[in-house]
Image (cartoon, rainbow, N blue to C red; front, side, top):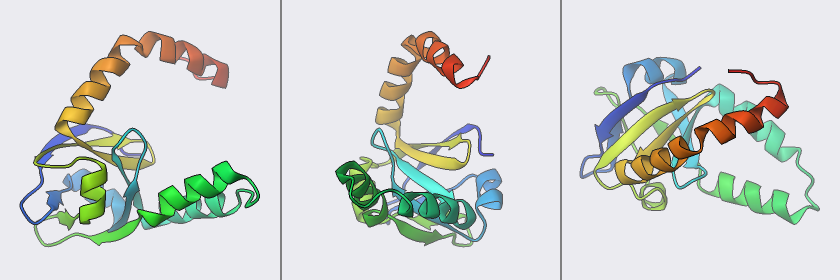
Length: 145
């Protein structure tokens, strides 16, 4: 499980340092793709395989399923760590997530998310205001806090 929040910068070559705790769990390489809410999702190869099988089982005749799998898979890229623990993020993914300089890397359960600092701050402020309502809705899924 990935958890925590870390602030890092992307260098001029598009590389970002992944926290050591996350690298240990991700392994020698990871899969990075477009996430929701204009961030990037980062998966271990094992977790990506599980997700890939689930997405490939979606009904091909449903336009929403086709659209989502296209969105998700077309943006995916395999990234490896250099000796300094950095991954080079492809330009199209950096552009999608508006990753410029300051970034936030968060643990989100089975995945890691990479956010631009501005987008994360904005998202966090909006979510913080409605956290009680969100928690209430999750009780429908047998999750108690």
